[in-house]
Length: 101
Image (cartoon, rainbow, N blue to C red; front, side, top):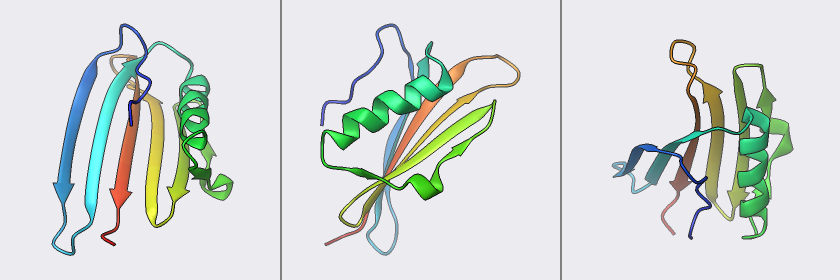
């Protein structure tokens, strides 16, 4: 999947790991200039076009952090946008957890 990355954003983290039971976790953290709510909404819209389903009961929103969780089959995607309290840099983190089939 070609993720929509905001022009001018910086990739801060991009890694993948596998747990002992075979689950795969991939994480991408990039900077954003959008509002936290707007950044999460854009990614939710994108993934919904890829047949992911938002689990609205798991949404959280505070002034410092916005979270959404989506599912596709047994896979889960957590999207977290937050502002670093010290640097004021806004980031969006996408963490995908895949269960082995």
